[in-house]
Image 1 (cartoon, rainbow, N blue to C red):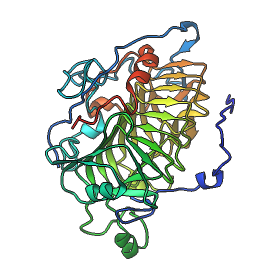
Image 2: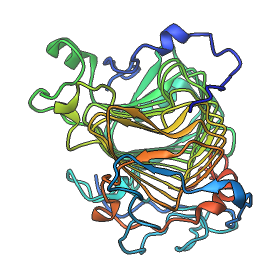
Image 3: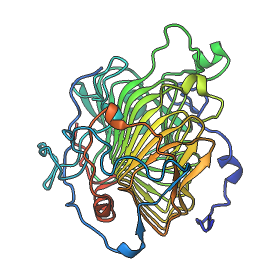
Image 4: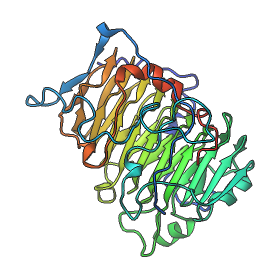
Length: 420
């Protein structure tokens, strides 16, 4: 039974606005919302050694079958498949130069590395020019075309008035050091312009204009997002191959990382979500099945949900692989089961959360017995979620290590800005 004990300072502020669907409109380079290939981008830098935690008497795998024939969700470890690709710090691979000492920070794992839609993986701006920006105007200029470019963001960049800045294809946006901050706006990873919005009568739909080219191949790393007026990161309008990694998200006006409107092939990894509310959507509307069905593949791993509230993620129509995340003090649920969802959750650690899952009209979720729940209501799972091993291999860390491993390795400041 839900305890509904979540409390944040200033929760009442902006409640009416938070109930609105934000980030769906079109815009120009500084928009009000809306919506290359090659080898895998390497992970670099230091990473913590795996640790462990006790309290075994209060720990449960936390699965309650939603059907009499499914007493337990499927696999007990990684869900099958080879383990050639390591997902964890210090687990496989070798550190690259220029990133500091310690074990290697993990590289790209999951759907953003999947070969589809003309891209073999996500490389961002690799191979292009490297620029360092310190102002909003410089940032706008650096992300407004499709040329490969590594954009190093130094210091705090405050917004120029619009709530969202459109980011075009083949970009790596990476903070320099531990204090690179995006203040007062978010990134709209979208090719949908005001001109397209005017000519079609709205934002992107299931039927897009002939010749429309979605944004693709974008990496966003090592940034702290504060005071976002809309979403911190919005991935709409058929954008694909996007990697959101090692960022810190403070509470935004709307979502922190929303993937919607036919977008695809996304990995969200090693981020710190601190007291966020509408943390992450995968699919934005129950009536958007025509555009979303068969798309919206996203991997969420090694994220630290730190006294956040809901949507970790909330899934409609999409395929969500949720593994090795550490959630503590959630005000509401971990994973939201929305219409048409297919979810696989393994090796997560939930402590003092309201409940592992919540029902929003969907049913298909596999919740393996490798998940650990402490003082958290169990998942309601039918064992019918998809198998990620049909797409890629992964090597999960033991869930009992996550309370030490993830806070030490997640968020901005772990990377240096030289990882590109």
